[in-house]
Image 1 (tube, rainbow over the protein chains, first blue to last red):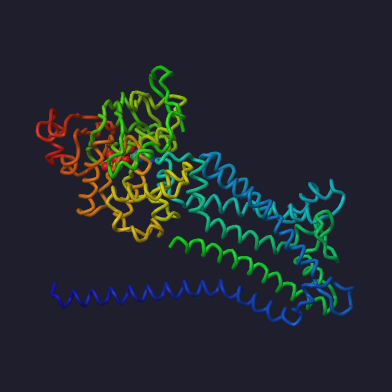
Image 2 (cartoon, chains in turn orange, green):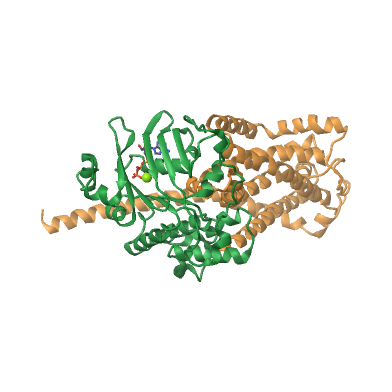
Length: 291
Length: 295
Ligand SMILES: Nc1ncnc2c1ncn2[C@@H]1O[C@H](COP(=O)(O)OP(=O)(O)OP(=O)(O)O)[C@@H](O)[C@H]1O
Ligand SMILES: [Mg+2]
């Protein structure tokens, strides 16, 4: 074979490979764009529709009777903060410990069993979780309450966070665990001081996803928190929540309600965004201290 | 994990977990570089067989590791060298389904008996792995003193001193002294391995196991590691796995040669003074292996 022929052969192959490369890149870019478009559209839509009614009164005032102008969704903002906060506080520790148990202690068959149960729990419609919290909290207490709402949200956040913890711990290389054991570090201390810190970023991301998810849940709050026209911090009374309020206003007949529903949606989006940006910022700062 | 213990000796000889503090030798650390005093201890491997599940990988190994000496373990890939040294500090049982038969004595005390805490065994027998495995979330400094810190030692000055001494002994100090608080994972592979060596010796174990510690290192770092091993032999008992015949010949006092039997299980062919194994082996298999005709 002459040097000439080899060059020509090489050229053809390279051109072909480049073409395929460009095609694949194009496809991947398209897929990413298709996934991003709805997100951008939703955000833009909420922003455009929500801005007209988005003002200080919205988050500081109680709702006014239907048909009157003004008023706000303060009870819903406060209620969402309380119930999502409490639900996360109850659900996250349980979930993280469950994830640790599955990955570090349960062993092959046990782990498979618990993972299956958790996936089942994740698949239960959230309205059914609401009914469960109704039976567990509302019936004994004799009243709808913020506590019942928080319990329902806790049950919903558990499977997400437990599975993420499990998966993130699984990503920590076994050799790191072995290094700790070989130093004579007991297994529980290895988990707390070596394995968990290595998985922390992933687990926190999972918790953020969970928080964002329960912050937007409506169905589980219908039979539990019920809704409230006044700001309350009492867990023993019915409590309002942004998704509940949005649902009520959006399905009502008044234009003012519709506008406030959009604005309340904007508040909800902003709350979740702020929270996740803050958490990431704190994490990044911690990682930066090392580098 | 199940640990099958073979014929065990008197329960009175159990190692008490409270016998010794984890950070032995720290109190005498200020006597200078390598002057930490050790009553070095020997290890006797007694009819040890090791399994992964039903799979026998080591058959009936009986071998004595002399105190204050370097013992090299050589043999073809897959013959069970790593498995053997993982049995010595009870790391073998960390693998799910892994178990052993037989017994190992550390300084005369059996380690495979109920009541012996593997954590204590591992504090006395340190280990350097085949692949470097620094703690990813810790700084270089924290990596070195991890064993002490996690054992509850908080004295900054002491930690500082141990870190510097260990890094110097691992021939890494000059390269990292200006970035002790950078991430341990940000070092080169060879530097990471020396970091792992520093971490292992920082807790002053009595026995140090090294699984091909230099396989990821350049000739200069390898030389440094060999010098370190040479310096440590006066106060420690060292077991080193190596594929490098010259290295075994250079650093070790005694050599054990393992190979794989027809049934796929590794076994001990012969052991003895390194000089004898390399110049006048008693077995044909050994001769073939060290002269490169096998494996
Ligand atoms: N976790 C494991 N599960 C099952 N079998 C294993 C496991 N680790 C090792 N083995 C098997 O045990 C045998 C011995 O492995 P080992 O790692 O001890 O060999 P080695 O002598 O250290 O080899 P090398 O020189 O390549 O490091 C091999 O046949 C290997 O396939
Ligand atoms: Mg090996």
